[in-house]
Amino acid sequence: NAGVTQTPKFQVLKTGQSMTLQCAQDMNHNSMYWYRQDPGMGLRLIYYSASEGTTDKGEVPNGYNVSRLNKREFSLRLESAAPSQTSVYFCASNRDRGLYPSDTQYFGPGTRLTVL
Amino acid sequence: DQQVKQNSPSLSVQEGRISILNCDYTNSMFDYFLWYKKYPAEGPTFLISISSIKDKNEDGRFTVFLNKSAKHLSLHIVPSQPGDSAVYFCAASVTGNQFYFGTGTSLTVIP
Image (cartoon, rainbow over all chains, first blue to last red; front, side, top):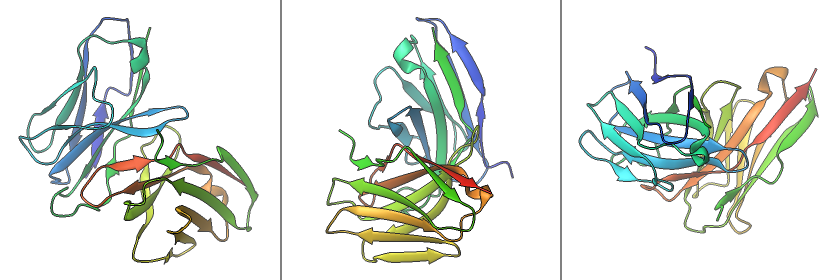
């Protein structure tokens, strides 16, 4: 039982390049989330998927797209990376946002992204 | 605007003493609060939570206190151990909605 896994762990991009961050969970969770962590800002929600087939914007969605590929996988795409997107990105999941709205979230280890 | 604030970026405590980490929030509608612990190069892990209908919740060495009138949350760790050295995030939500996280407090427990 690996929990929440993220790939890659580290990535360096040039401005304007695109990339996809991958996230998978093996806990049969319905809800999945993408956060970014910046110094002095805490963790901020980018997008979430309450259940398979649905996605919604969080606090800071601009510049990102997401895909809930299936129940296990939730990817985050940067179409044209900008230096302001330099951050640590965390994926998280929990049982079901609708049925258990206060359920704790399980986090992956993070992806450290630098955009030059 | 930051709805959840942790005004102390760092805290150092001697092993065996009490660690007190503080968190303030601005949204009076928040009704569920959590603390997460984060080690370097790892994701945050859940530590303890409290609902707004309570003012205290204990789990072993960890106790969370909620003062709704002051919009203030605190985490007490007694006794502190070197393995407690980590970054601690508080988070708050209105039930059914997203969690808002504080900026974190880095705790160092000195042996």
